[in-house]
Image (cartoon, rainbow, N blue to C red):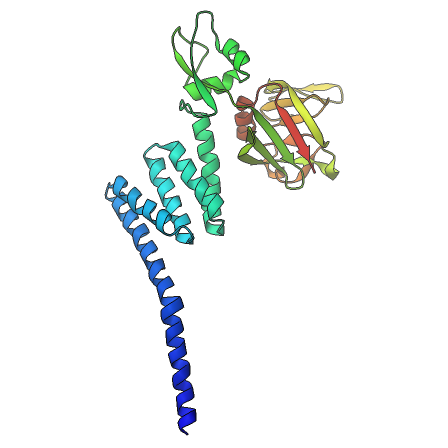
Length: 300
């Protein structure tokens, strides 16, 4: 009888020791992390952003193995974003995305990274991918774009210029990085690369029956509001029959290129005669970034 009485007691003692040694410390740590994050949110709400940042940095520094560190980086990125510190915000989201591949963190961080990449690109902020240039006598946007291998449209966007007028001595942000494009037919995705880094992805349509050609091509022609030629007939851009949308970027393979669409519902599918089809606002964005000569690689 005594033996039977002691067995349950021993089990209870073992469970209690296990809880004390393994479970309770982890719960305590988790509560500390959550407490710091909640404190940071409250501080930020009260207008004490610098104090909030310190709390969040503490979570990242002291609990680097915890998922809560990823959450802290997301909150930190949002605070930096509100402060207009776009690069710090993007880097915080990027660290969360790369170091803490939890589904919720990836879902929050991924779109923010791409959004900030484009916001930085189209802003006057000079980063490692650009330089400041002082306008010289005889300069024009066309001339500067040609010298630096960029586009007039990107010069306008990144310097808040609406027309073509620039003045002697004006300081301009000039993007000097090399852009390229990769189209993945298996996922119907287009990836915009800045040197070797993917900075944005776009959902596209490719050719029916996998007919979009595989290989490496270059953009050789760029057209705004392109005319579509079908069966020897010129279909103007204003016609609902014109399927090319608002932009055309033709390859050095005749008949193929990247263009907009009048059928956005087809995106994400194999639905074209072989070209790469995009939403009009997105192809317009890409058109402004990519100069003629840009390399486009299409893979299965």
